[in-house]
Length: 330
Image (cartoon, rainbow, N blue to C red; front, side, top):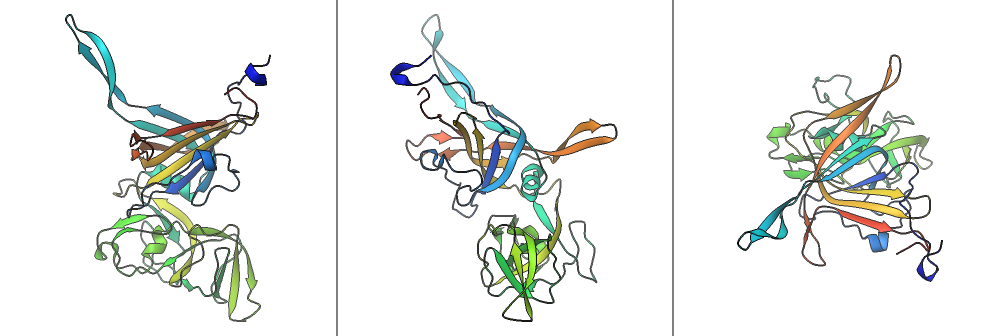
């Protein structure tokens, strides 16, 4: 049955494959949360998210709550409820990830997340990764390919991290987002590799080919561009064998998050949290598959923090947008 003016009645979105999650770092050095304009960017292709947003893929489950409170304002004699007003704002979010990854671990850990750099032949052991192997100097590299010495040991399928040597900086550090807060160089033992330990500027090596212009160099072709773009002149590359987080760490990451649920009829639901901080506590859920087999999934508990909406100055924790299918009811 047709609606007014020939529009067809809308139905609840029927979503195939669940919601896709994207995150962007909140700039802890004054830049603030990542803006997402649903009017301009709302129909982006999930395979190519807007600049600065990193894909986490489909989430296995998502549960969100508005934990705000209201106060009743009583008037008259005898007193009756004249109106209600919001007395407190709050929102929480719980997400179960379909797959493990560095980003998923960082969002679920509740503390600092670090790269496990490949260790040197002679090293001092440490619970969060021992003495790293030498980093390779980059020259003539791009966001999609890294030019390193031919002597640097790396294979197709390896993960690499690209960042500068640590030189005594303090504050929120890391590329392209804060991976740690450093109060003093002594606190991190003046470790020249510290920025590569905490960096999010990682990529997978898809192939290793000789440099056609120099027998002393090789080219690492990356499966995806580096999140921070083309390496700056001072950056170097290390091989990453895994990542580690630590229950009890003092650093709290802060992220902007975007969830996209596409309806099969062409409509789209968008949930945008400008600021999320990780609630303490690394958590995994276990799903029995068969006798002796179970799936371990990462679960993140997140708390929303407010931003000020530029259109009216209101404090906002989450934006929910609906983009209807063509010719559906407004």
